[in-house]
Length: 298
Image (cartoon, rainbow, N blue to C red; front, side, top):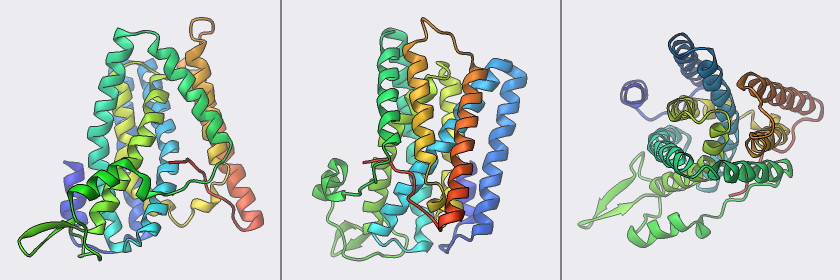
């Protein structure tokens, strides 16, 4: 309902998203998520409330990496500013169903095969080390299997047709480059979901908390993009912070039989590491005029 209100009422007409409007929408999604977190705390208790908040903060931080890659995709395909909102909106809708499938599959696997927990931990540890290496992201649509498969099914027009994903020409439907961009965005979200879902399972194995914290963060992704797209170069050390957090959660999952780490301690580690990485990034960016943005290879 809220997404329908977002696109159908407040963004019915294509136009450039102002920083002030994006900031307002971002604040709205964050406030809504925190209110929901408060309800969980009151209804389910302190531990579920902490677990939700930890997962939400972690996913929100991982969203910044999503945003940087989205920015590269939009630049690569020269997407007009007034149509970026439409792509991100439908990207968020697709992400909701995708994350639901990932959470259900992950919960089922953990319930049936306990050793999957250790596999998730090893994967997160490896991902964290990879992020700390700060490799620059690369966009290769011509190598993406989903994009290649889509191009084999639908012929694509040579130019954009407003905000349309498909147009009808000479009795047949043609995809526009905007549809190809949406496919690329959804393919990117698959990559990030593979990282983020196991990470939240490292905080809590409750499917409801995993899904709700993940989706609350994803709902604000569109607005957050328009807030950060001109500031992304100021987060040069966020990739390092995210790498440390993912490595910590991976190690926690691998050692959970030997060392018990409470949700409160996990939250403290996530918040302190991410806050330090953002503060140091901002100070260094202010001192040398910018730097490289956080990176995740595709």
